[in-house]
Length: 493
Ligand SMILES: NC(=O)c1ccc[n+]([C@@H]2O[C@H](COP(=O)([O-])OP(=O)(O)OC[C@H]3O[C@@H](n4cnc5c(N)ncnc54)[C@H](OP(=O)(O)O)[C@@H]3O)[C@@H](O)[C@H]2O)c1
Image 1 (tube, protein in one colour):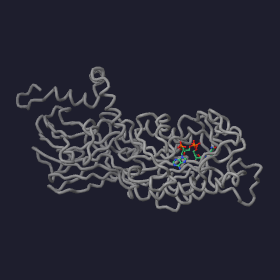
Image 2 (image 1 turned 90 degrees about the vertical axis):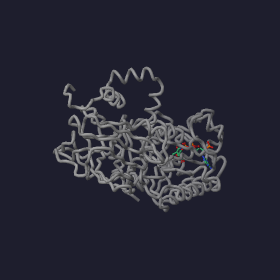
Image 3 (image 1 turned 120 degrees about the vertical axis):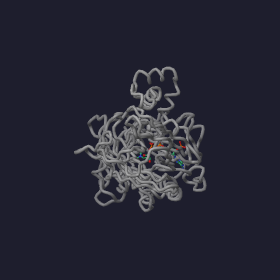
Image 4 (image 1 turned 90 degrees about the horizontal axis):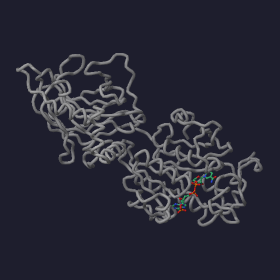
């Protein structure tokens, strides 16, 4: 910047901007080294963006349930576990999990303490079945589905747990689950420390300009404000999030709703589906009304792919399953050199109340049931070939019959659901391919690990909505399943 007529460019702010977004590798690793665990926390916080609601896990102390909890935790979900015995739950799940004491057979315990703020439920409860001679210490062969001993029900009846209990939980869920399936991604009315860490200013200082902006939490809103200047060939101010880690999946939604109050200027909202610093952004321009709250609806289909304010021809549509960052911008330019008709240099201000994904349809209640539930009493069934639970249904208090009634209570509710009917459960490490079926005819086995993975995947898969299906493992070992393809095979009920 040798030209005396030029405004003073701020090199320090340039460095600060890039290092905030981790874009100067050496500098940001040095910062990490010196700030130690603080940075780790920041990453953890970013992983929680878009996961505002709570996932309630019932049966969290069970074989499938505890694995569901582990996976949800890893994926950054907020979890609450419905348990009957808090000490037992602590010993299985550790000290850092939100536990609530309740019993699904006692509807009065399914109160607001248990159900408030829930976004979805995964139910893995079951009556206790064990060999007549008593369970082995390590819940050995019987539990692993290797050999079925003479079994008996211990404790409460299948009618109470598998039917009445599940029905109670469905009824409570219908009362507390949000009616709209919108996904709140940023709720500035209820700000958390994480929000402040995620958004940072990204002004034309990166191109030599002198505009200056920031984002602050003010009175239950985020205030994007500053001064935009066209000096030094600049002319934009913006705030951008750090990359979400992991990126989140909005493929079940139609677009984004922004709740904003502006100053009459035209702003842009960018979404990126790659973590490249200077890659393609998918942009949407919107006008604000001075001092009036408005909802700006941004359909994904209307986003314009741009690279540095130039539209990109033949660009694929945004990959909504891999949303990496958001950006809000006030720019002198529209696209391809056109000017923003509502632009004037100087101070500006845009308040944001929330950013949410709209138009989604995802399962809100995942129920682990069992293969075989429709087989007791079905004409043409050869009991000798059937798994013990089908053969011994009557001796086991009608376990499968009551499980089917429990399923029915969910199917009859208004709640979007997924009903998973696994074959015999094992304690093997899993990682096998999944074989899905409908019609309740398959036999086989499947690891509890894989069933738990399926429960968690169903929560993010629109094609898993309102389906009932059986599942067993195949022969092949797989590292990554194509969930969309798997669920796409299924017919909805
Ligand atoms: N075993 C198989 O081969 C097989 C085959 C197909 C399907 N399934 C089904 O797969 C699902 C998961 O099986 P799993 O082996 O993970 O079960 P599990 O280990 O026996 O766990 C059952 C869970 O349900 C909880 N529970 C029982 N009654 C409850 C009540 N009234 N209120 C609240 N919680 C209650 C238990 O809590 P506590 O710790 O307090 O007892 C436990 O956490 C079950 O639905 C099961 O029927 C099993």
